[in-house]
Length: 385
Image (tube, rainbow, N blue to C red):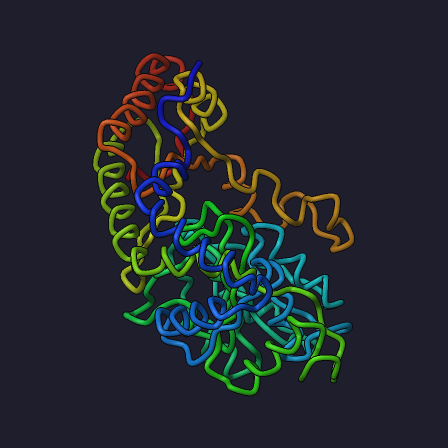
């Protein structure tokens, strides 16, 4: 069946800014400054202002941002880094890439973010940093994590890949730790037209080092003072992102309005629940995530109705073949494993229409109505919305 409601509609957004995007790209093509051209520095300054950090360093992608942030504080072989089990594998891969050991902890069952109460017991003499992930667009409990980190002498490196514009107690994600890392993958709230990433910090020494590390470890051309990477934000992508950044707040507001409508219409349907909103954080809804015991059946029903849906992290990091070495097994992180079997991401993008949301919710309601007799005999594990 032809898609009626896409999961993400990048064309709809591109059409609203096409003239400005074309002009921005044309200027880069005319200047031919494709590597670290002036548009990169301009976007870095504007993005730093946006997240209330003193510095921003553009890099090749979100995982490179994490890897470079870890390297900038000299985390490497023999070190341990604590991160949530409930996250995309790139968070762990960045730790592995610098030779350090990822230590996973479970998430909170209702917020889906790292559970601070479990972090303390995971700390060992080799622990150097905590990486909280602001999952789906809602901030982790940063006060609790920063308190632990400050008391134990640890770095806090935010994985803000899904939190472009999220506020934690009125402070932007990106300014809440020693360093913060962003991805500009095309489907992010602030997405490039290819890969891109950013590291933000208010430490000028770290910013200077990051600028070297992303560019072969160079202080000046052909003067390599340390072993770095080739991971620079592309000038064309910086130009695109500079057009988009002033619109981001408005786009995030639209996402929030869509989420409010989803929540209102989904109330009372079957066993559907949603990520619990926290009073300390805004939510920019990079993803609108629902839970149900009948996830796979609902997924197939929506797809059959022409609705784009996603399942995020169906195989948790600790159950991935690539991380068998960590020694975790089934049951190690029960909340993460439960979510992996229950969560479903519904269509979410700023240009989503109310009638599209209504169509999605009607399809979910129809599923539970048509299966009500059979489902009535199954236990419901969740709390209603």
